[in-house]
Image 1 (tube, rainbow, N blue to C red):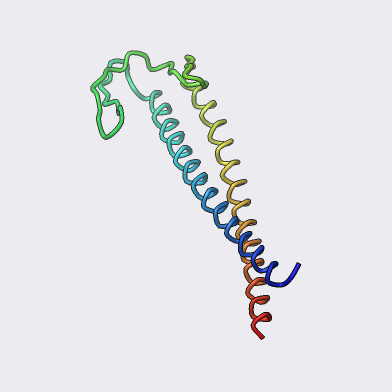
Image 2 (cartoon, rainbow, N blue to C red; image 1 turned 45 degrees about the horizontal axis):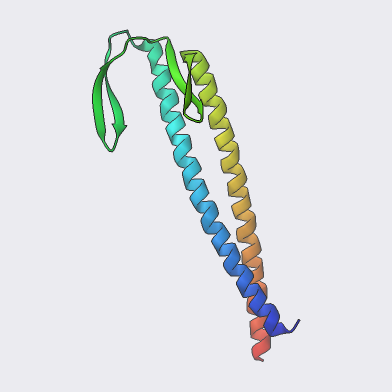
Length: 139
């Protein structure tokens, strides 16, 4: 492979790394948003211990819109298990389930962050190497 071909190959690979980093950044943002949602849910569920039945609530339904509601049962919550299916759990069981999910999300965040750092490092190394090759080729 000639130097020119190797430079072209490296530049293509650097662009590929850039696209991977953009994808990882989007995944990191999604995971962080999801983690925040779970933290908010855990906090809200945890506050049920202190709530009385018939407590008046504002329930968010999205887009800054709320409905008024009364709390009928403070000992159980419905929690999603996937595919649109929900099951009833005690408050303590729901908190445990939310903690488990948050732990998995946090682990995925750490893995994605590490992968992003490795790709960034590889891209920078290849970029320096390519820059050096281009300078040598111009001489």
